[in-house]
Image 1 (cartoon, one colour):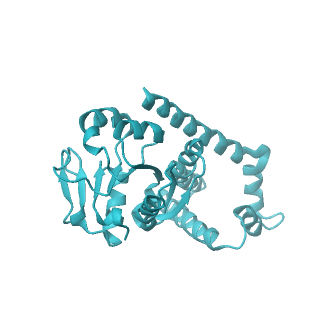
Image 2 (cartoon, helix red, strand yellow):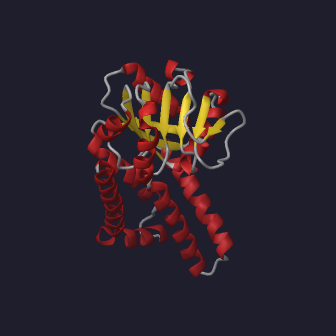
Image 3 (tube, helix red, strand yellow):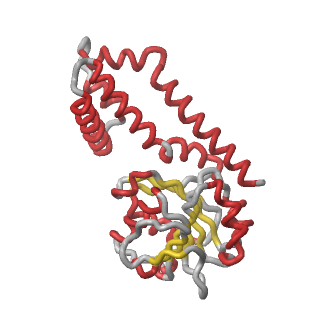
Length: 269
């Protein structure tokens, strides 16, 4: 465990994502007694974690994690921004909010942007990180903090964070839509809808696990499933015609990336 983690963590906001990260951290060995959740509500937290409406008095922790909504940043910074000045490491999962904005509002020693997705709840998430800090120890602390959540990838250029957010941050939502669409299509062929949903979910789960372990990219795996002239090939022909699926996903991710850019502009005001 890094010195920053051992010095304590303040988690600002404990909604779906913040709560999922918190549970994984405590399950992986982070001492609940070293964690304070700053949330005006009554979130469900692991035993031993303190919940407070405002920062406790005394020394700062080693790490502050911002897990509020981007639209709440201004009010939070106005209320307690000065109290966080000098914290060694500020980790932000706020979509679209740039490092420069966070550095100006909170004056930490280092800022790391993080973009997790909801699969961190089971340790199978994706967490993208970016930071301009040259402090290797603090970069290591951020990586160690996120390691129990799943795959951790450093992103070289901050402008690419909009793309990362659209792809892996928003991606679970798109996958869930795809699962639901597969089930609805199965029901349209006559399957009971509850059975179609079970089959669709298990198909996506198994396919994802196999793809993660395979020695070939997904495009090759798709061709391995599809025999010439067979039923899988006929279905793939629909998805591949005029790059229909590729164009749909490009439009989907582009829309999400545009919204991230809009939130970044709003956060600068």
